[in-house]
Length: 377
Ligand SMILES: Cc1cc2nc3c(=O)[nH]c(=O)nc-3n(C[C@H](O)[C@H](O)[C@H](O)COP(=O)(O)OP(=O)(O)OC[C@H]3O[C@@H](n4cnc5c(N)ncnc54)[C@H](O)[C@@H]3O)c2cc1C
Image (cartoon, rainbow, N blue to C red; front, side, top):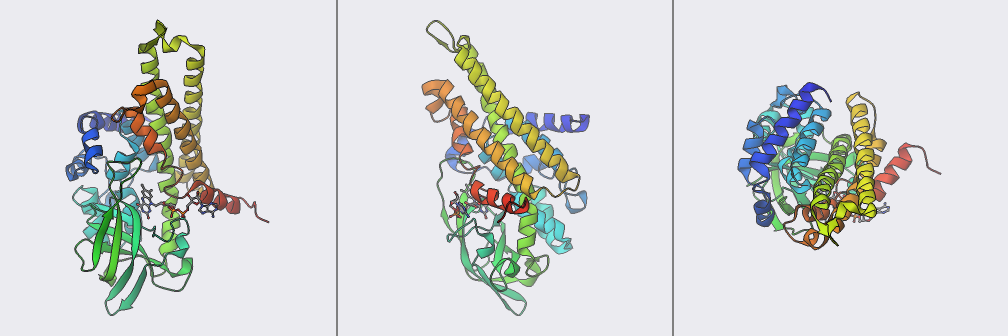
């Protein structure tokens, strides 16, 4: 890691110690993070990292984002916290890349300044894995699209000021999908339910309703019918980011557990005095190191311009499995304390469960990788 990235990681660590760690349990209990946190992260220069300066970002690339994420996880930020605070990372890339100055000025700049919150709505109650099969309809009427449908499992959906929504403007399949920005307060657009979850408690997750919502044509992102290609393109970074969540919470859980095993005594000696405990910690470390190294490698190749769609799928799976193992082992080694609500390793253990599902279930991503790698009949 170069010096600049090291400094960025340090800023992220300090920000987390000051602005996040002391309040996180309160936000978990409240079910959302406050808007002020978005403003504070923007002021600190964290929210805009890897977005071009021309659209209001802070410049840099995915490797800089990873430095920020690693810094935050190392000080106790949770996967849910990162999902909530950085929902901009999935809501904005399509708008920023479309090059439309109006969309950039109305949505990208204010979001990266921490003034607006955006969401990305692709998944529908009928199924999330089959993105090309979405049904939410957008029918052109004059200078607007009329949108009807339902989206579910939408991160930051209850708090969002605008939602980048995948809609069907054309025929069946991927060629009929477009992206439209739907703004809060537009008649017919509703937050129908907030969805309680196993983990990610501080990240609000919502079901959204669209009933005859008139969305101006100027809110179309990129060309009509280009939505599927845009979603697929930006999924790569989302999957690498979720992979960072995986080894990030695993590394933090390991650090907490190593300290605990040094301090906690059973049978008159520290847990660390047991070889089986030491070996468990080494195995946890091995999995973290492997996941981190592989995810870094895939991210580096992405930044270098290589096509890593398949590798991003494998990176996410590798890191999700690392998190599943390590976070579970962390709870085990904390004993009863590890099972208590409010113990940090317990939060990471619950949060880890979403990683093989969100952003594409492992089975679906494995199938995608199989096709891209030519393992087809
Ligand atoms: C907390 C949370 C936050 C989320 N945030 C967002 C968001 O911000 N925006 C958004 O659009 N979506 C979001 N999602 C949705 C997420 O991306 C979907 O849950 C995911 O894509 C899986 O879709 P599904 O839940 O409909 O599962 P389904 O598609 O119904 O699949 C169910 C299960 O079946 C298996 N499966 C499915 N297809 C296959 C296959 N072809 N072969 C083998 N096995 C298969 C997998 O195990 C899969 O988990 C979020 C979900 C959660 C839980």
